[in-house]
Image (tube, rainbow, N blue to C red; front, side, top):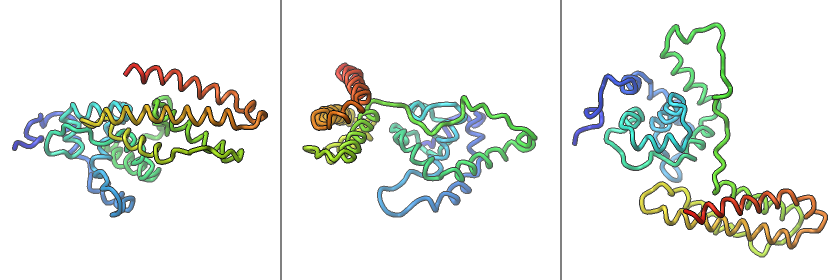
Amino acid sequence: MTSLADQIDSRQALYKLAGAIPWATFEEAFAACYSELGRPAKPVRLMVGLLLLKQLENLSDETLVERWMQNPYYQFFCGMREFQWEPPCDPSDLVSFRKRIGEEGATLILALTAQMHGEKAEEADIVVDTTVQEKNITFPTDSKLYRKIIGRCWKLADAQGVRLRRRYRKEVKQSIMALRFRRSRGKQKAARKGLRKLKTLAGRLVRELERKLPEDEKQRQSENFALYTLTHLVFGKQLGNR
């Protein structure tokens, strides 16, 4: 089978850049961040490559993963030897990787890539545009909002000593697991079912707290409950149209 390197143009910028980056340095530096236990982790070359592409192309995590499946140069840059039809990872895995390597790891990536520019990188003053600087936030998708509502309901119930009829921990965990594979072929239906389940559980917990909380606490939480209800209605309507 013809390798991916033989199918693309070696004059292209990403092809040349892939050969110039010291990938082995990253693999050695981040080896301590990994464990032999649990599910096999994504290759360091892949994850570092994705982070670099994200910065080079100024893309969101979700858009980057989608374009990676369509762009052979992206895949070659990340170390693939054959064209891949499946996503490289879930967008949330990029957030986890950034947290795993920490600030020191991010600094290492920046330092090594800056060295590749030679004297051009040795400026006395550096101007940083914080409007495009990466922030430690993620896009507020409907699934994340439902999970946040459920988590806050649990905390509020514990703080007020309210005994919930059920906490639905198992169902929430199963729904979240289903959503992790929402981009995989043949698993979109299970992911949509998991999202609907989260919506249902969030609504149940909110309504139960509204019934069981003391009147004074219910008044203090009125704005939150109104926001939860609005989120439930807006995203619930979108979910019903899918």
